[in-house]
Amino acid sequence: MAIELRPDFAQAHHSAMIDINDALEKHDISTAHRLAHTLKGVAGLIREYTLIDLAQVVETALSKSEYPLDEDLQALEAEFYYVLNKITNE
Image (cartoon, rainbow, N blue to C red):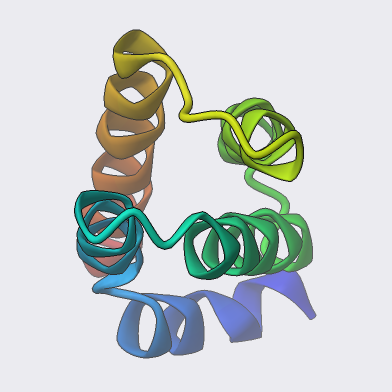
């Protein structure tokens, strides 16, 4: 099932990091939290465990109404685009 969902993930969530960053720039922690939580969940559906872990770190900070560390956001973004690229080339 995870294999079948991968193209859907790439199509439906291709702007997830842009959306998270936009929400943070607007100081909308609630939306950023929801987006990070969603990203974590769909990463689980496609069995991308590193992406799950990095999304969890960002989600946890946001759940405390704190901004995530820059290095945590950068790590999440790098992994996110790595996964998208991997899916595109499957």
